[in-house]
Amino acid sequence: MSIKKMMHAYTVSDREAVAESNDPVAIVALLFDELIRNMQEFVRQSDPETGKAEARSHHFSRSLTLIYALQSSLNFEEGGEIATNLFRLYEYSRLQMLQDWKGQAGERTEHAIVVLDDIRDAWQQISRKGAAE
Image: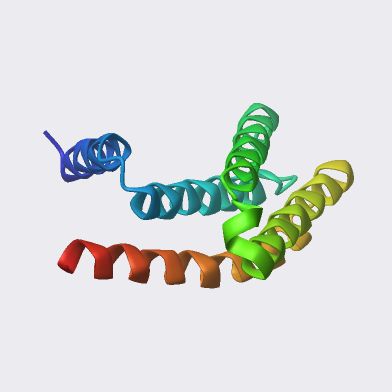
């Protein structure tokens, strides 16, 4: 078995373990990882010379689904202003992707990725901190 296949198998089993753990922080961190990975692939597939329309469409759709999942998971009663700001950030990311979809580009999505990456790092730190306790 090649190293690439072994790493893929490990990654898949690690994701499945997180999903089954019922740890909401770890699940949100996983959703962020998947969202950013799909957004990055959407940008790569937006290149008119090397991109593939079917793959671009798949990663666009997957990204929007993940954004919706993150938006739907927000608790506005308990989260207050933080939940509201996260919703706005997710909505901003969704709108940037829609603009890039229409324009066959990826620049706006790249900017949204940078913003989301900071939030992902925060979730990962919270997840690691919780796991250490």
